[in-house]
Length: 100
Figure (cartoon, one colour):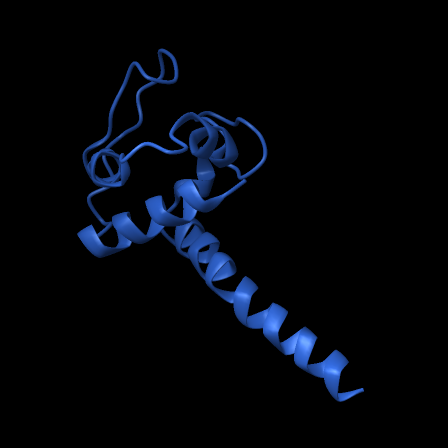
């Protein structure tokens, strides 16, 4: 019984950061155009993680979160998101790149 409880608590602590980062993405309106598993207006976050796997792109992608960008994922540009701080942009990108 104690072991089961420990495993459940450990799983909750591991899952908590991922849920917190998804909550931040929802709070900052990222999820209006993106989803974890499927393309909406912008690419699925798992597709972003796959494209940039093994590449040192976190700083560049965090800048794109704040400043916007175009041409990488199609004709529709990603608008700038000035309400996202530098720390939040880094947190969001780290979460996206961790998705498998």
